Length: 310
Image: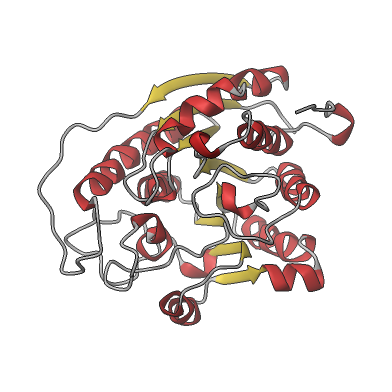
């Protein structure tokens, strides 16, 4: 792959989750050597630091389970602006989370940039959960379960989340690794037409074919591709530092294959690294694995990979 300019944008968000700790995620990625790893591969890296909130407005919602709504919306506004600026300034912005509610801001931001360039936005959602709840349907009240419903323009967010400049077409979203779906989310997936591949499908048919087919659709459309990588996409045996562990996730080799295929495609234009909770980690092993996966996406090959001891 060609060398790229990257901007690291820290998003210390934890208002969308139920367990504290994700706000430490950006610094854990830095400590695990993300910038140095990418620079060693020949890319230029600028760390823009962490996005900060400017203020909170009072907000409430009829669904009493919803918590930290004002803070999450404020993060969405700040991160959308940061995403637009980063996308305009480099080849590949990398957003360091923070819980997955950060995608309420990052995806609309990069989609706005793509629309201005006349390119359709595609999203690869690597996650155990589809995160396609509305504010009305969520029973946990955890807003990291709402980004996909919001940025694909589903109803229930008007007047609460920021108005979308460029919604992502549901058929431009591909989900891999899904294995925890609520009934309301199952209904939403059926209605929207999002391309979903759960772990059973991956067990039966492998991970290569659905990803290959999706990448070919992105290429045919000359699309921009945002990748949103949640720690819980991975099996908790290899990535324990997440507050929403679901057994049976992607293996080490499956995850690296996904990243290597993305690298080979040359299509990735932006990246989320989310749900890393260092408080739950074991000597930084999850942060290091996420950095290694990012390195595979950015050009590191099997022959370049060093043996790691824990």
